[in-house]
Length: 259
Image (cartoon, rainbow, N blue to C red; front, top):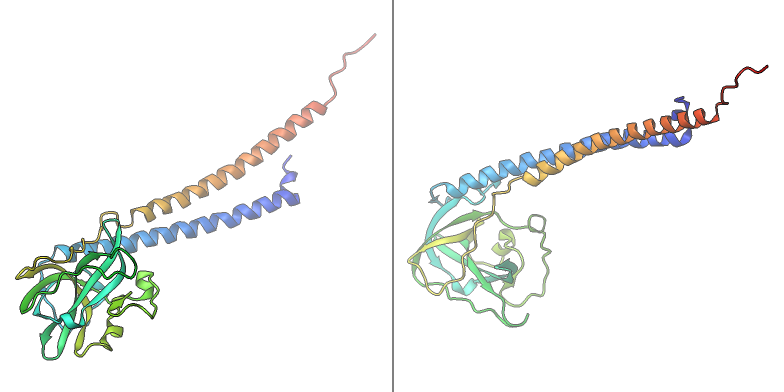
């Protein structure tokens, strides 16, 4: 009754199922791994956002564990070297980040993202940018890592209008500034004394979801394993039932004894 399982058509089906099962196992494990990575990253960012601000340490290299760490730094803005970072969405609109160097003395400075401004009426219209305050200020903000094409998905290019950039790439910007830059940059959250008008503050990152979607996808892939095995067994049972029904219909009817 089960010899049909060795026919070419069924052997091909067995091979497909045996290939699909480990593939789904690996895909599920990959999603669970991403869940763990994102959950750990979310926990780190949450802890950094809630921690008390610490003075910015120019002597210590910025690392991935410093993302969104609250820091303070004092100095004076260098408005002459201010830059606008293109293609930055906020409030459902595309605009610019206002990136202004904060000179702290001793030939050192840190780039400060003072906030967001909406784009002009056309691509060639310069946006309206509130001026940076003059004189000493104390900045509190979130520490961010230098951007790359890989970390942002933004492809850098040349030929932009004067004073505009696509990436906050600190090593690249270092070449065009007359002081030594800190390895990351600061996303402004507060400033003393405050300035008005000022660019719109950049909102904090949304860390509520963590890796929840990846966990759900992992469960989904492993459920597909049960679906594949269940479907495979169901097809076998159906084939057996069909063959038994066909065999029963071909059996001769019992013949009674005659005179």
